[in-house]
Image (tube, rainbow, N blue to C red; front, side, top):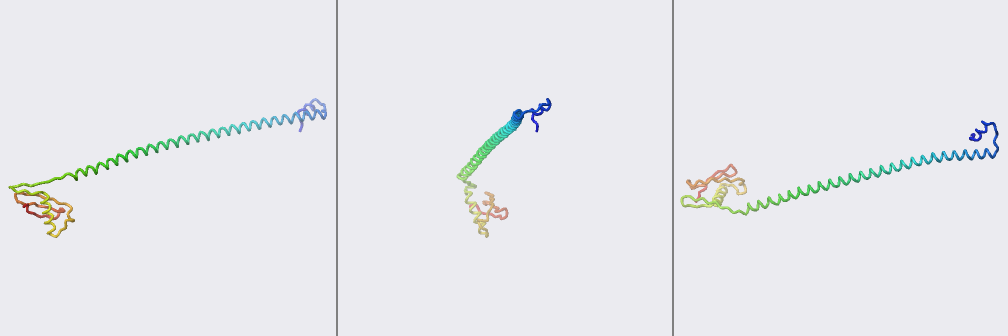
Length: 172
């Protein structure tokens, strides 16, 4: 390996002394070290720049993930709130229906048939129809539908039970 000083000396045709060779060698080593140091500094700068970029990328990705998680949490909270509101409305509607039924059940009605000085209540007619059905061999628990037709001029009530059995009972 020839140094710059040796190259200069060869060009000029002179030989260098030991001291001059040593000084030239030190200069060359120093220059080589500077080049290496410069290269390693540049490499470490590139590495640190790359590390910074990776760190910034990771931070931005973490922030994006955090924002997405918050958005999902807000969306879930909204869905839950809507579901609770709908459930409350359904509960209110369910509570109102039994109240309406209670009102209907509490109403007491009476129906009287008056004809030619006679009077008979509808519940008495229905009881007479049920007794007639049972006397024919039927059971009260078998009755699903009961239709009663009152004909005062015949002094009778005609009935149809379960759209199959028919009969007649006296109104008196």
